[in-house]
Length: 146
Length: 379
Ligand SMILES: [Zn+2]
Image (cartoon, rainbow over all chains, first blue to last red; front, top):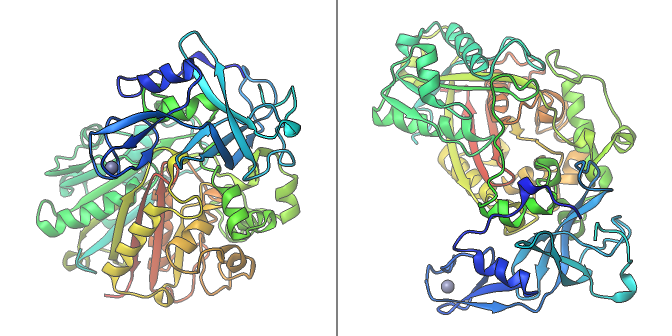
C-alpha cells in the first residue's frame, strides 16, 4: 500500500530501536524487569510501575484480529478499500496495522482470526509492521493493499 | 464542587448554525459570546474569567475587550467546554474570579480563519497509527465497534437505529441541519464511510459556536434568565491512541468522569429527566449509556431500540438531534451543553415536560478524554 510522505513515521530516540528492528524483520516489544509487564508503544520505562529497568525483546509475531474498519474513502495515493485494524499480539499488547494478503471485506476479515507479522519496507528507513492470515489457505496473492 | 453553588446565567449559540462562510472562527466565538452576554445583560467589563479551546484565551480576551483574572485554555477535544465549566465552577468557588465566559466557535465546514490540527509524525500516534492509512475520526473513532458487536451482541440494525431515533428528535427542532425522518433501511442505503459505519451514522460537518456565562448561585437571582445550577461535574482522560484504549467495549474516561459527576451530584440514575451523550458517531450513545451506568454492558442497543431515549420515552436523550442530525462543527460539547441549558430553562424546541435534572456527557479526541456535567433548575 502506498504511503503519503507526510504520514511517514518520524522515529524519536525512544522509539528508534523499534524502527531499526522492523527494518531488520523483527517485531520488538519491551518488558519491565521489575513487574514483568509487556507493553507497547515503546518508551524507556514501564507504564505500570515506572521502573526504568526494561528489556527489549523480539515478539513471536503472532496475534489475532481484534477489531477493524474498512475505509471506503481511500486517499488518492491508495487504490481500493483497505482495512485499518487493531491486532492483539500473543504477548498481550495491541497495535494498529493493516491486514494484507486477504480480501478487504467483512466476509474475509473475521474477528479473532490468527495472524502472522509481515514487514512492509515503505522507504529505505521505514518498514511498517503489518499482518496476514496465519493460515496460508486464507491468503490471497492480491488484496489488502499488499 | 459544592452542588448548586454555581449557576449558568447566560447561554447562547451563534446566531446562525450550519454554513457560515461570512464569519471567521474567532468571530464565531465572539458572535456566541455577544449573544450570551446579551442573554444575561452583561458586558465585557463584567466578565473576569475566560475559557476557550481551539482559539487561545489570550486572543479571545483581547478580541472581546475582557481583562480576566482567571483563564483556562484546556484543549482535550470536543468535551473541553464541559471541563472548562467544571474548572470555572471550582475557580469561582475558590474566589479566583466571579463571572466566567466560556466560548466556542468553529469554522468546521467553511474553514474561514481556522487552522487544521495536522499530524505530528514524531508523536506516538503519528508513528504507530497514522501511517496505516488512518484518515481522521471516521476511520479511527469507529475501530472498537466490531469488537463491541462481537463481544456484547450489538447488531448493525441497532447501531443504525441510534441515528433513526435522533432524527426523530431533530424533526422537532427547526434549527437542526437534517429534519426529515429516516428509517434503518435509509441508513443502510446511505454511503459507506468506514465499514460498518454509513454516512448517516457519522456526525455532520458544520460551522457554529456557543457560549456560557457562569457565576455564583447567590448572584444568579439578580439575572433576567432562569438560573441553571451546576449539580455535579467530572472529567478524565485515557489515551490519545484509539488502538491503545484498554477495553474496546467501554471507555475508562467515561466511567471515571461519570462516576465523579454522579457522586458529586448525590443523585441516582432514576433522578435524571434528560440526557445528552456526545454523538460524533452512532456508537457513542451506546457506550455512554452503559459507562454512565444507565444500563448494564450490552444493554444499550436494546434500550434505544425499545424507544426509551426517543420522544415519549422514559430517558429523553440528545433532544436537539445530536451531532448526527443537529450540528457538529468538530468539537460538539458546547452544543450539548446548550441543549441541556435550554431543557433546564424550559425553552428547548423539543422540550421535555417538567424536566428538572439533566446529565450532559462529552467525549474528547477518540475516547481520549471525557467530561460530565449534571445540571438542575431546582435550587
Ligand atoms: Zn513495571
